[in-house]
Length: 360
Image 1 (cartoon, rainbow, N blue to C red):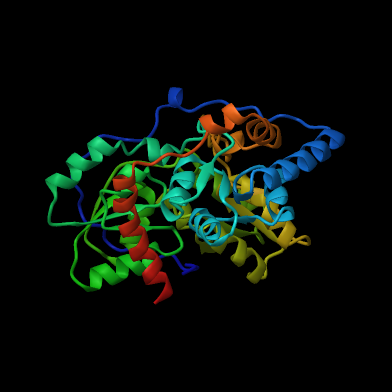
Image 2 (cartoon, rainbow, N blue to C red):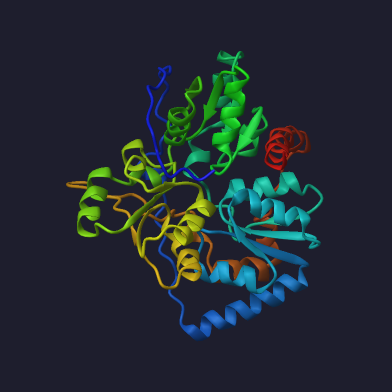
């Protein structure tokens, strides 16, 4: 549920782990293409034609390019968070899914739709949390703690999901951890340490945390956010729980992408400072045309940013890239998601637990 009143409790000690946050040299630099209006229209028309020809539906995440989000909805597709994208694709009659997002989203869609072909504009679109949780390392970590229930965030590879007992999204993580803690279960959590600490602070669950972090959310700075709030004292602050604790503590509302969008419409503020990927601003502005949205700061005094509030892998999902992939059969085949059947079956089990819990 949406959390509008963050509170802190004493956190349990966790065992030391290597820092799995990505080094700067592993983060790509992507410069989005600048399109003239006529080219944008041409590409959208051609992509719509290619989707029909290939019996495909386009699903897009809130963080990708706004033109791709619009095209998904204009062609009968869907824009949402990763789980709802996969669930929509599973239930849609199209024989193929085009997933505009990052690789783990394509994998989740394939797990839920094993009989469909799943493609991405580019398989180079990775995720820092996924990359920061290598399956072999994580398997060894789990084997060291066989008494713990393994709960992994959706932002992980299919191989890591296959090692887990539960998969959760940021929108349902709190109630699931509360449920498990009430049953006396001890949790092994991966990969996001900030989200893990936030859940731990809200539930007082016994959680052993992996040490990964999102390259976007980890860069939000509490001091700079305080300073910006001083300039805009009437602004509401919306924060994704992958952010550091000091940033979460300042928030008026903490939640997943869909919960942030919902909060922007429900809270009385006319101006919001938003601590999540700026790709969400497209949908925020569409839903709230009379409200203003400002990026939360990603650099403080003497600091520089690596992502600057936009995931460089999400930025790879552009109209031109999508059109080129759909147009070229060899390129499309090279960007298809393939999952070993046994790995897919094992990953389906924790996903089904989450889906069943959400329906209960």
